[in-house]
Structures are given as structure tokens and as C-alpha cells.
Amino acid sequence: MAIDGPVKHKVLALYKAFKNQWLDGKMKSSRGKYGLEMISTKIAKSAFQREDLHAIIFGVDQSPSKSNNCYWGTFLNQDTPMIFGAEKYAKEYNYPVLYGCINKIKRGHYSWEFTEAIEEPIKTGYGEITQRIHSLLEQDIIAKPEFWLWSHKRWKHKRPAESTQQ
Image 1 (cartoon, rainbow, N blue to C red):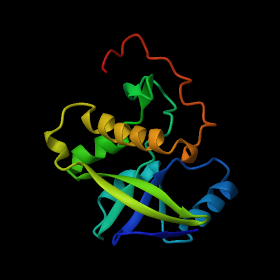
Image 2 (image 1 turned 45 degrees about the horizontal axis):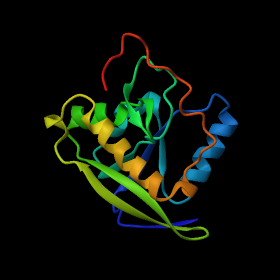
Image 3 (image 1 turned 30 degrees about the horizontal axis):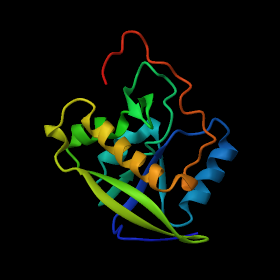
Image 4 (image 1 turned 135 degrees about the horizontal axis):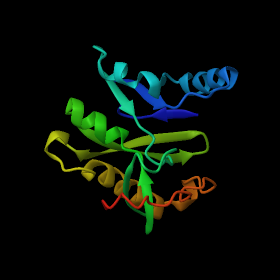
């Protein structure tokens, strides 16, 4: 697989490490073939404190493991728990948030397209960044549903009674 695109930075991706060390190493190796550096969420803060010029990727289409520790919004017309990490770090470091869309050119060849989602995170309200990037993802899914992995059970959580934000 070749990925051509405008990323001039060292690209880091945050991920939740597998308990199986062999499987974890295999996944990091396969994703690192083209220069992607995988950073465990357990040491995520260190990625933001690095001195080198870098871009950090968050997987926003993931289902949170704990539905009471996330942002709740609407995604594909469903009440949906959303991982809050990108917003948390964007606000803490006031880093602009870009949304990246991967486009299939032909089998095994892809390109990146970036949209500036939020320029100044520090000026946003609670959940605004999370809802914005999920809205962009939703637009991509509606435009090209065949490229979204539909096998995940995304709506397995119900909104806790104490969570009322939308």
C-alpha cells in the first residue's frame, strides 16, 4: 500500500496497545512500514511534548470502552458515545485540528485530503471539536459508505442517565 500526500511532518498515531505482545508488535510493524510511528495511549502525553515537528493521528471512529467517560452526540442519526481524546489534547496544547480523509486511487494506492476542522481549539466550547470531526467523518461515510468498516458494533452503549450533553 502506498500513501501519497502532503504530510511533511513525522506522523504519530495514538493507539490502545494489545495485551498480546506478539500481536502488538506485529501491528506496530505493519503500520510502521511506511513511517507511521505508533504511540500507546498510555504514553500519549509524551507525544505532545516532543521537540520534533510532528502530526498526531487520532482514530475518531472508535467506540469508547467506557460510555460514561466520553462525549455523547449524534452520529449517523444515532445517539453515540465519542472518544474525547483529540479535543482534550487540542485544547490543552492549543494545536489546530485537521480532519484527514483517505481516498482510494486504485487498489493498494491511496491519497490523503486534509480539512481544517478547528483553527483555535482554546476558543471552542465543550464537545465542539469532537462533534465537528465526527460530522466530517459522517459526511465521508455518507459519500462513500463502501469504504467504512461496518462490522464494528458501534452502538453497543446506551447513554448513562447522568449524561445529558448533546
